[in-house]
Image (cartoon, rainbow, N blue to C red; front, side, top):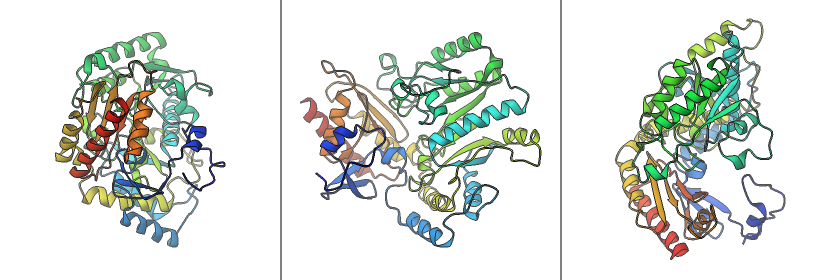
Length: 439
């Protein structure tokens, strides 16, 4: 138990009443580990919330943040600029797909998604296609918690009880355990089903009404589901055929998670817009961004009077010098330690082999992986659906492992800096936890 007063902070995505009865509090972090108040170590196999890709407590980032705070802690981004923001934006473009050389900074992934939706709308309006107002999203997809992102949600529990935009249609989710169980990397089945659903939406709504498609290249909160073979290429093809923008939500897949700097690069599919956040500066200072094709920005600029802002939108902390300084330091680490590509090398291979080595555990019905992402799905059998995952999650924590439950799927996204021995420790603690829960 903790001696902290737990009454006043209403925690996000938390059963607060249950938490107050059994608080789980971290007091410090280092490398691949978080530490409880009692000093016990917890292997962070989730990299925080998919964000601490460079590991915890990197001195280089802390020093950069401190130095920036003492030099220039804040300056308004509306009508003004600071060197770190421009420098970070410039350096990021060395890692984006060809043709994407613009970024609009935000504070989070949720803000990045809503910003991307607004840019897409504005672009269509600017080019005389004001009737293109609808969006296509995907079941099991997660796109943040603002109104736009909530409207794009393919997770019903995140939509219910909240106001949502009605001009949204949904492609089917990619999780198909019956046909794709225990796939390594991209599974075989699902692209044809998506294409049929896409064409059905076009026939129903008309291409002239559809602004953009927004999807995660790899579904994250929906259970860590890689795209079927050819899936993203087919989405790009259909968007081009029907004059629809393609938005990749890369809040999770960006910054080395898949084995390339971005999933767009990994899969060889260039979207028109990409959202990012989380690992953009190692999860250290709140920051996000929307990467935009040069041509989209130029169209908006060309159709806006040169006496007013081209985009009436922004956030107080967008591109703050401290967040950008953290990003520059994190980018040094990504580049010098080869973290953007390590998930496609020996580290990723060891991760895949270790993860699929858990197949013999009781009630396992699927294991999925791509890069340094993974998921193990369980059959709850006589237990209520979505109840087994939380039990395994709790036992993992008790055994020194932070592993996220998404229903009855256990989802992993280790720091890119994780060592082989720490991957082995993950398997040891995960196996122990599952066997203790299931016997």
